[in-house]
Amino acid sequence: MTDTGALKKLQQALRRLPGVGPKSAQRMAFHLLERDREGGQQIAAALNQALNRIQKCCRCQNFSESELCVLCASPRRDPALLCVVENPADLAAVEQSGAYKGMYFVLMGHLSPLDGIGPEEMGIDKLHRLLESESIKEVILATNLTVEGQATADYLGEFVSRHKIPVTRLARGLPIGGELEYLDRGTVTQAFQDRKSIG
Ligand SMILES: [Zn+2]
Image 1 (cartoon, rainbow, N blue to C red):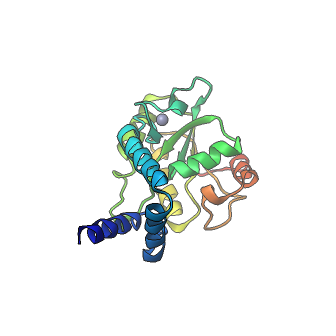
Image 2 (image 1 turned 90 degrees about the vertical axis):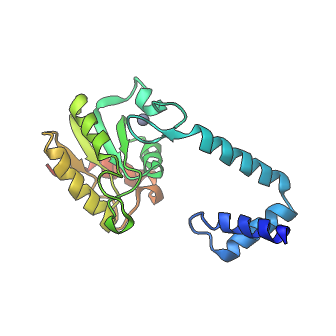
């Protein structure tokens, strides 16, 4: 009975991952238990370590093992540019394009009132303090071209304009409905080069 309980718990836990349904969860659980117990231990240990060590950067909200992340601490980044992205995967896509050398702010989501995500949850207070305290000359809104990403950009565009800082938005080169993390480097680079002023 207890065995069944542990197996069920494992499957339920795996189902919390995005894109994992009951069938996949069952397959993963059986695979780990039957064929790769060592892999299972590695996953458990890595997950534990990540959960213990990784926090949000105090400046940009990106995942970091230190209070200030590597990008925020780097003297090689241009402090006059601030690029706002929805999540760490989008930041990674921009970094891989090599088209951008400024700073970031990671919203860790987008405006989604139905899911209870408002400006506060995106860290708007932190963004406000950043815009007040640093000499930022341009804010680039690189939220996705989805309905939610666009609504978020509209909100942020107005918010940043109130601080009298020029705002640009990645526009051309990005397909409608496009999410940065799934685009190739060339497209992301193009989108940066062709960014448009919105305020
Ligand atoms: Zn940071």
